[in-house]
Image 1 (cartoon, rainbow, N blue to C red):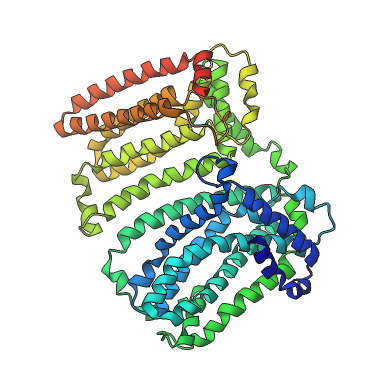
Image 2 (image 1 turned 120 degrees about the vertical axis):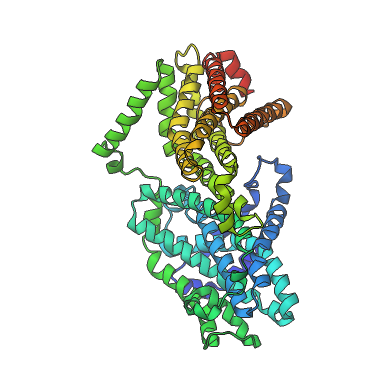
Length: 561
């Protein structure tokens, strides 16, 4: 398959030469990259054995095929053929572009091969174009099965001629997405310092994961709106200036009518824009690409200098560590967790989206109600839905606990075992305090403020009780399942078997007990009963806290097995 794809790419050798590319070097680089792609394990789930690697491509294509069903809603919902195609290509192009920024950024801006390629006499055009074509091939393998559901719908609904034309706008859409992403990367590399590049990409990854979750869930409620389906298209003439409309205009060649004039002329842009955009990117944005690429992993000395702003931040966590911890081991666990949670892109990628998932899922539950959203919102203070929202905050704390022990530089954890620490449990509780103060307390504070503003002063006791119960639950999770030093374990580790599953089930049953007990107390309407339960939960928290703090070395080693 790789030979066929590579042969098809090299058919355009004349075009590549005119762009200033060395075609011999281009062929060699692409050949090596495609071979390496076939040897990579799947990017989701646990690490697979080598004998299963031959199914990686098939499984990825199958996953992409089912993902493609998400995009077919506009084709079924809107009556106007061109507008429905515009909505389809808009959704596809938008999610594809952001997916490139997040999931494929390691392919486009790959620094692992810089020690091999950059010292060689390879010009910027060759280096950039090799990455561009590589990601195009990689992406085409995913986009093709992802487009099959829409392709089938178009063929069944609009005839075989429309299905036959479909690959052309699909191909131009891929080129358009690649142009937007590569141009964005190159512009960021020119404007921002190389050391800040990965931080920008990391922020986009977090934003994209939040957007996708919100889009898929909230769209299910929004699509119930009859006003959306009966929308007056002529009021949105600006869509003619967007690339998805140019792609959809290609179907005017088959006689499809558009409510906007001159749609046939816009279809020319569907082909001209991607070609000219890629040409301009290679010609004008690619120069000095190698130099900028080599600086991505560098450290800017100016950024590491101790300025007044960073001094204030350092003083803050040092003061908190000294104020909230007695032992040096607990202070160390607090400071390590505080600093690393702010530096680790993996941790932020896993935890930050969960903070947004909670309010998004709550709104989704309201949208799923059969009544109009305005009526549901008006009746909200009369319900007990605030308990559901409050206890959902436990997911954010548990997610933080799940990933605070994981790191790409986990081999540096030898310092924990070399230090003269008598009771390692102090490090764990120090780390827990840092997570609780830095993430959970501000988060539950914001959610609690919203609850009080909607449900009134009577909900203050519920916020306090839920905060204590969630803290007890998180501490039980730490005690039973996560007695591991912060940032000391690789993300892909061996499963812990049935014992670990039982512990997880037990902790979540405990959360159910806390939530249901709170609901029963709320039904009674007695404030004194809430205060009594709050006191009992606080005592339970103290008992579990002392147990975690007294964790010894044998218990730590048992948890690592």
